[in-house]
Amino acid sequence: MIVPPQSQTHITIDLSGPEGNAFSLIGLANRLAKQHGLDPEPIVNKMMSKDYVNLVHTLNDHFGHCLILIEPPGGLV
Image (tube, rainbow, N blue to C red):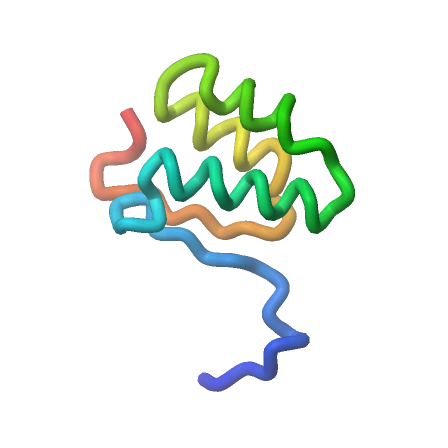
């Protein structure tokens, strides 16, 4: 199905693909924070404070309203 750009409200990220690596997700959080008028530093610092699962959960907590995160087979753990 082809959808006009204005009706695409979510960004889909396959966490098992190249867009799901930690550096890509941190970059995405940085861009989304700026787009939403937020300071990205505290979000990125929290993402980097622990492991990958924390990184993904923090991203989802802040931007889950505009993201669809597809878990890898077997889940995150």
